[in-house]
Amino acid sequence: MKRVVTFGEVMLRLCPPGYLRLLQATSLEMTFGGAEVNVAVSLAQLGLDARFVTRLPKNDVAQAFINQVRGLGVDTTKILRGGERMGVYFVEKGASQRASTVLYDRANSAIAEITPDELNWDEIFEGATAFHTTGITPALSDSAAAAAIVGAKAAKERGISVSCDLNYRKKLWSSEKAGRVMGELMPYVDWCIANEEDAETVFGIKAADTNLTSGALSHDGYIEVAQKLVARFPNLKGVAITLRESYSASRNGWSGMLYTDSTAHFSRHYDIDIVDRVGGGDSFAAGLIYSLVNGKSAQDAIEFAIAASCLKHSIIGDFSYIKLAEVETLLKGDGSGRVQR
Image (cartoon, rainbow, N blue to C red; front, side):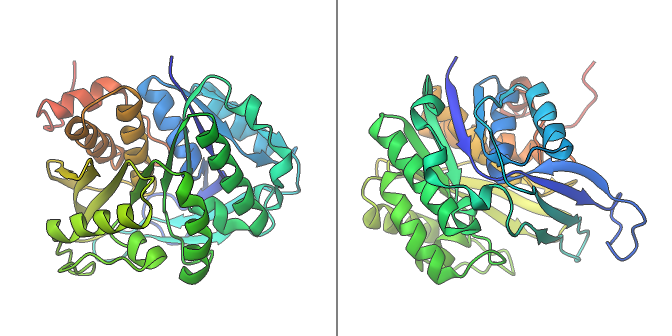
């Protein structure tokens, strides 16, 4: 079985029930989430050997997380234990014209205090085919950034495919620092994943004729973005971009593009009614990685990734519990939602 290693932060997710606001809530639902572990869980559900690497304190909350993802099929054997706390984030699920909001409480988390020499990449990458990280981990601290860069370099030196989701978070760092740090990581990346904002915010590369607020998208503009990314980082084998049309917090248009070998491949388009948007991009990344390590064509890869992430929007919580058969059913054209008996 092909093994994929992901590296990054996991947080305790606290969310008011239903669509309550934090100001209304008298209780909070406790789950876990984080970009890289979301990818690992999704890959495990799709049938791959997924190994998640992070640093967590020695307490019961961190152990509860490990127990949960181990039960979901994720390899947790290389998780480091140390530090004082796990990061926390609060999510208010949006509806209609009210956007979802996220409040972070993750300063001085265990992984933010990680040092590169704590990680034994020879052991971590044993049997690995692919490595995935995101722009969130380097945003946590200079030492976390160094660890991510060393990890990507180590993977590259071992012939392991490297993917990175730019995943810019304005609440964690400035666009200027993101550009500098991600510019150091990108030379080791084979597959770059982005959304409609990341390339512009991190690298100043903007899609022409696109308005994020109105939801207007230009296919030619995104091809240009991918071409400029490849020109700046010629090591890239491809650029994958999710195309989200935000009609409202409750309903989005969803499609994607994979640019590789000087050709742009666009997926079919889905209109989705959103149950939980958080983790949608991570399930896209997982679907793309799954496709690439299994040798799918570029067109089939982008179709699979978009279908997998389309389905994730129907799942509450960060983690995707979508199975391979469900993605394949949607790819065959059955998006009716009829009861499966």
